Amino acid sequence: MLEFFLGMVGSRPIEWIAVVCGILNVSLIIRRSIWNYPFGFAVVTLYFFIFWEYRLYSDALLQVYFFLIQFYDLYVWLNGRAHDGRVIVAPLGTGMFALYLGAVIPPDLKGMRT
Image (tube, rainbow, N blue to C red):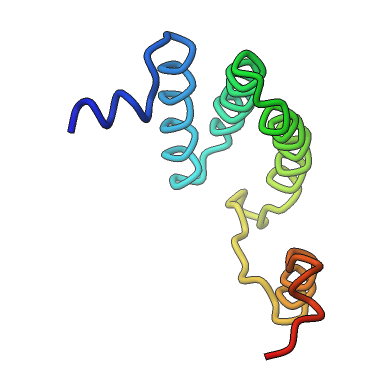
C-alpha cells in the first residue's frame, strides 16, 4: 500500500510539496476559505514545472489554463458575496447546465445516432 502511495505522490520534494499544497487547497475550498487561492496558484505552478520536466507538454500547458482561470475564480469569489460577507453558493440552472454539457461533448459524439 505504501509503495502504491509513493508511486502516486512521487519521490522528489517538488512533487511532495505539490501534493501537500493540493490537499490544503481542497480542504480550504471545502471550508469556503479564500486562502485556498494561494495554494491553488502554487499547485498549478508546481505541476507546470513537473510536467514540463517530464516532457508532458500538453499537461504543462493545461496548468497554464488552470492558472489563468484561477484569476476568474478569485474575481467571482470576491464579487459573489451576500450582504453579510458570506460566499453565495447557488445551484447551476438547467439552461446553463445544458450549455456547458453541449460545450464539452466531443465533436465525434454530437452527430452519433443510437
